[in-house]
Length: 136
Ligand code: AMP
Image (cartoon, rainbow, N blue to C red; front, side, top):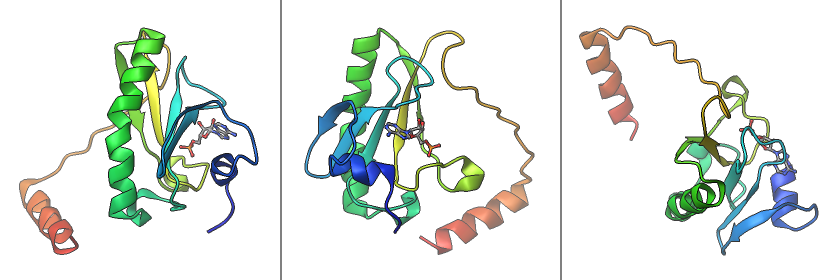
């Protein structure tokens, strides 16, 4: 896996405003925030995308996410927030190290999301669900 900016932050080779750290997880402020308090939570395991992350590393991040989110909300006074997790270029991932964005929302501040829904026919849904199940 290529060296990423987040690997350098974990190794303290470049600075970051770190808000949380344990053996498996690091959380720090996003350098170009979409809103006040925009924070990134990352596993220390160097996986590029979520599907490549080990179950243990995913569990470690999962344990920490609610706690960091709660702290961000208390610090910023926001009540609402998005958790965003991009994987791959088509999904707007710029840094190839798994990361979860915690983005506080207040009015027009923050993230813009298009949600162009498509129609899913019942027979297609059944087939698709079966296909996904067969890969689990
Ligand atoms: P993504 O598009 O999901 O890959 O988002 C990558 C995020 O990393 C962006 O929101 C960037 O602003 C953020 N970012 C990039 N470099 C740094 C850095 N050195 N410190 C903190 N956040 C960073």
